[in-house]
Image (cartoon, rainbow, N blue to C red; front, side, top):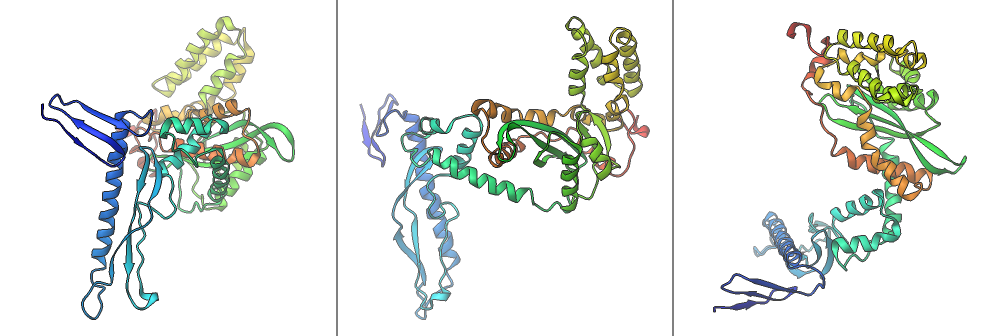
Length: 432
């Protein structure tokens, strides 16, 4: 049997037989052969990438020569080796060193690797993993164990202390974000909601803090987080201050439609700051409010009847289903019908917008689903600590979720909407 053995850095041996059985003897305890192979492959790729980067830099400096025609910018060995913790495991690398022999110090060029910045000890992926673990509910005390399970025994330096430093960084990022310039921004639709969190307010003792959240859809149909600020309950004044601040920072164009719960002080504030914006009440909240005023024995049937309203294909059909619900439940349950009928007009506004957008406009689900992880985190930790930490945490969670938010269906219709075209029952009249 033809057999040979190769020795490779980081491995005790690789045996290849005619039976194509490969045995890896790892130096890293519980790591599997596949883990070891991935790590070694990553290390080789990193080394090759660094060599290529340095070679490209030297070629770009090829015209820098002395009087004898010799190159001034040359290779000069390697920097001291260092260990980088990555998602593929710990990688030990040596970065090539470059020397510029120009006589004038001020004329010398310096090589800076974009792949391996100075002092880097862990990859950006792990820097993102650490806040993700924390924000998803892993307690600080369990960090070391969780990270060792992911990247092995070399998860040193990724302890709970890192979270403390990162929370400070998140707070700074949040403070910059809430002051960002919004000039030139436009949001066709906005969703508003109040998120309650158990935090320790420094000036008001222990109570539930309300976070005012505003999301928007751009003319390209992409959803963006517009604002996350603290508010006093969900008062008109708190929302007014938020909307005025957005306007002063450059958000001058009013949204076409705003979606939110009927109980918000948001609507009174919106009417003052952006009076031309139309209103759409959230059917999810309205359904819950109506059902709470009905006995459990009829809630299932009433819920089906409510669905007949907002799932109707046209506004006239929705109006008919609306009247049917009021006639059916009004005599016995006037409180439930009053709760529904008082917002009749603003519950059916979505019919005047493209039909492809209806699923996005009938509820505040874009906010509810995005902030479900925030409530999970508060449940795990029994609160986020201080007001500053809570705001920063919500900001980072929302920022992470934003990358996965779906683009609006039928986003091409937004152009027609911005041109002032009028939609009837979800379509343009001349296209019906």
